Length: 289
Image 1 (cartoon, rainbow, N blue to C red):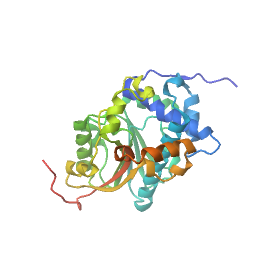
Image 2: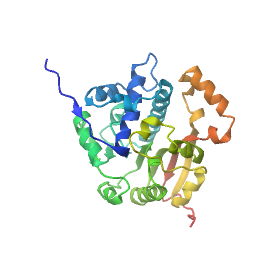
Image 3: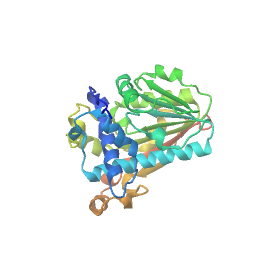
Image 4: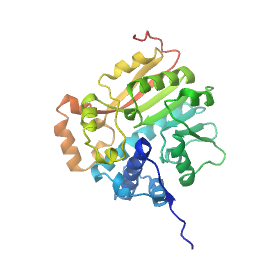
């Protein structure tokens, strides 16, 4: 059988960072006891003409990314279970196969969104449709609120942003969250955030795989409750310190021991958090100036 030519990759900057979590999920899938078990990630990588060494992370870091993805999958699935007629907005979807990993049916609308150049690549690698289901793939910059006008606000919506926000400027984070709440009316926002200590470390080039793409981390927050001030209809539901995340016991002994020792420092213990916010007109609070 004739071997299919691999897809050429020309992404640069923040768009190129998509290969880091993709490679991590693919590596996890090949391990003896995978955390996420995303076989689709390995299939996607095999179709790409890309220097994978650029995106490679140590095994421990790959496991942590797989753990993060699994938590966001679970939150997404939980929302769909309690809102059987709803919308999923997956921002900065990259080459993530979440729409294949999470179970959803014909009463769900699923929209994957990323930069136009990322979407062009995704169309060559991953499915563009799912039989009998309402799926869309949209190319747009999330910092340009115009794309939101194309998203119907006729049902509760879960917005999955996973690792996106750290790459945005503070004003863009606040603008995005505010526009989402204004437009969509009711639902949940799911994202990861780092604190200021981690942001300072990352800006010093502590993560080589990101540094060599030319992308930069720009946003962090110490007090999560301050995010509620962005919009009066926004309310924090849950925050999980990564070091206490469900499944952390599945990491290697070395990773767990290191995190345990570091967890005695508050700035490290709360360095990376997975957060879930609710938004609804029923949440009414005076936003700060």
